[in-house]
Structures are given as structure tokens and as C-alpha cells.
Length: 279
Image (tube, rainbow, N blue to C red; front, side, top):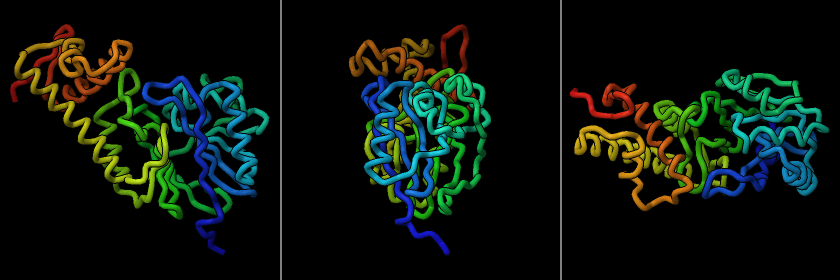
């Protein structure tokens, strides 16, 4: 008999983490029911993880997860698996981040890789794996067709835009991923940080427009100033808009845009000085 949508639940579990401003929490998601469940992401390796996950299990009459899918290896998403060793979980990740995941969750060793388009089941309900690089090379999102819900990982965050920066980030891949995510039939997005996104298509469009606007700013500055370093570009673009403590983060984002523009054949880099190519 076909499962109906109310036979699984998707519980957002915000876990306090020292992540990038303006976020103060990383989301885990518990998907399932009293028979079977899957946990998506686990936050930092801190006691908050086990406390919040076990509270969610009890509050929502769920069974403890035997599988934990990690959207990516970053320290605010993966190492918290160590706090959940007593569940004896199998950890799921993308092949491209297998080595980083092994390091992030050591000493746990029971890891399986999943691939784009693969369907896994929770008590008979299909969940589709999406490989969506950009934030990291092996980043995963999940789509639950019966609920029309996308769990985006850090491809989408509730407040503002996702950080894309070296050495992990690829702006060209990220924009392609966002275009692909728009093709899914969604009622809402469960982001990597922040509350549910209830206007999924508008949110994705907002992020894409913000990224393309930043790219246009870079090209206009290079047209006007002829040649600039990534530090100079960051200073011109952000001016007094950001706190000095996040300047390096902003600079890495600008550098990710510059890498994309070089791949697109629009910009060249000579000894750290960027300029437009004549096209």
C-alpha cells in the first residue's frame, strides 16, 4: 500500500553553533516516524547536538535514526555525529567529500556514499538525493516528493545568502545548482541555517540576482579602474557595509566571483591584479 504524506514527519532541529554571522544555529532535520528515521546533519561536536536530537525524538514520538546524511563536511554540520555514536549510525555522504567526512567524524567508520538521483527510503517513502556543488564540491540536498519539501543544506540559508568561497566554493557550480533546484516542485525549503523558507522560488531568485549583481559590480569596477586586487575590489564593493571581522570572508566571496569570471573568459589575473579581457 502506498504511503501517504502524513506517515512521515520532517522535524527541523536548530542546534546552537558558532557559525558564520548572522546565523547562530545550524539545522538538523529528523525525517521519519516511530518505525524508521533519517537524520540530516549534526552540527558541531558538542553536547547541544545530542541534547537537541534526543529531545526532538521524544517530543515527536520518533525512533532514533540509524542513518545520518551529511550535506557536507564543514565543522558546523558534520562532526556532531560523534555525539550520536550510541545510535550506531551509518553515515551517508557524497563520494567527493568522503575523505573530509572520514576526518570530520573520526573515530566513526561506518560510511556509505550516495550519488545524484539516488532514491533512499524512510519507511517506504522515497527521498531523492541531489548532488548540488557550489558551497562545497560534494554538497548534497534532499527532495521529499510526497511532501514537496527540499532540504537544501547550505545551498540556501534563511537569512541572506550562502557563503561561497575558496577553497571549497565554486560560483559557477553554485549558480547552476540554484537553477536546477528551481525545477523541483516545492512548497517549502528547509535551509541549512534559519527557519523554513516558505517562498522557495522567490528565495532562489533573490539569491541568484544578488550573486549576478555582485558579478556586475566587479565587472564595472574593473572597467572603471582597469586593474584591481581582490582586496581592493572587496573594499570598493562593501565599503562601510560590513564589520572588519568579516572582511576576509567577504574577500573570499569576491575571489569566488573572480574565479568564475576567469572561467567565463571575461577576466584575467596577473600577479594578483585582476583586469577585464577584451572580448
